[in-house]
Amino acid sequence: MPDKFIVPQFIDKEDQILGPITVRQFLIMLVSFFLVFIAFRLLAFIPFLFVTILVIGIGGTFGFLKINGQPFHVFFLNALQTALRPSLRNWDKRPTDAELRAWIKREDVIAPTVVSKQKPLPENSKLRDLTLVVNTGGVYRPEDENF
Image 1 (cartoon, one colour):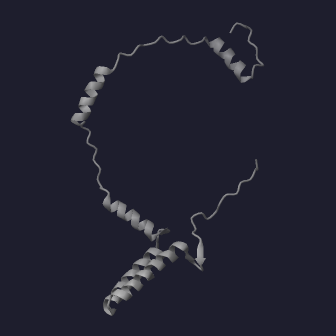
Image 2: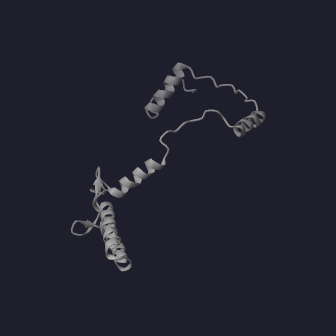
């Protein structure tokens, strides 16, 4: 087995394909330009300008903006999850009727537990001898060979 291992570095850095543009950024901008092309074919000039500014703005934001070192889509998903999740969580400690019925049924079924006798602990001298035998790997031999 080799003594040295290669540890990957910069695992959070994305692969770049066109200069500083990553694959994710390229695909986001490709989809944005495709939507602009569809808007160009379907809309008149003034609505086309509004749609183009909106689509390119959103595409550029999702493609190139970073907040706290994270891509904007990660920040956006975290903000969306936070907004949709309830901000206050209450724990109702009272059991429901179904839980109470289940507990009552379980108490009827539970059998009484049988207490078993505990094995007596070895004497101190015997325990010391056993410990020495184990720690020395069997080299130590106690005086009393009957253990």
